[in-house]
Length: 390
Image (cartoon, rainbow, N blue to C red; front, side, top):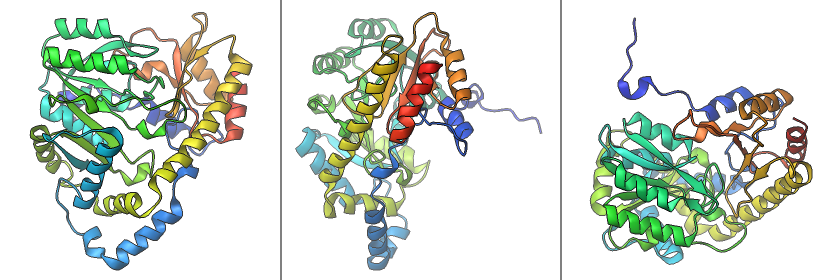
């Protein structure tokens, strides 16, 4: 058979990160390339206990079909929490459950963008979202990042000059891959520009609960009195990524279309993980658990940055995030980044080349991403020593 793939898929390449993870799994490689939460943050005993309770007390609810919008008690609990903690949710908004934040991102693109429409993204940005946008046939325009978030003047220039801009996609808190947090001033500026040019914002916030220093910055969604922001959140970094439970808070009219689109994808998010997430929020010390995760990441990030400064401070620059999972390291121009990453892998440390995160993958880039949540403390120390030697 001569396979002819659709135009949307034919040009897509496998995620570099996924390929690196496959190559390094099962081998004695230090996984700085991963983006996985630390395994010690998983509340395994609680999940086991709650699962037994659910399957004993009300197995039908967990094993039967559910509504596409999601498990109602979880939806209501999330609405209350988002309002109380982050002042998010206007009368015109509604919330539904998705199979991981990635699905929420893909659905937003699906319901708002036609083939050839433009999505403006931070550059660099999360490769999973970029590939999802590419598969829809959307045209991507990257705007460079500064130390406090997206370059506002260049964003406005793109909004002025690019055709059929439908979305501005941002990860404002502890951005993947840079670890940068967008300042309050820039968040307000982005919202003002979206209102001026009549463009919606897709605010992706999977790391927002993982702040381990400094103070919280209000979400862009908390400023949304015009129905311009689709907010995507997740339990992947605070409960378990394997459960695949995310959520979307969006204007009701937009949410209803996203729900219809979801019905054609997976009917509804798996019921057992949704019920688990609800019990975790209401019958466990949810905030205490998040604080324990923050403490783990505070320690691991400090360990990594201290060793970077000690061993590589004179030879590279790197971000020092206030939360999240990632550091963005930039090599001097004299060091070829791809060769550096290949040599590091051969020496036993997997990092992700910065080109994987660029909107235009052929742009010059001399940076790479490393992760401090997945490796052990011993691996962090050894891995930085190897990177220094390379």
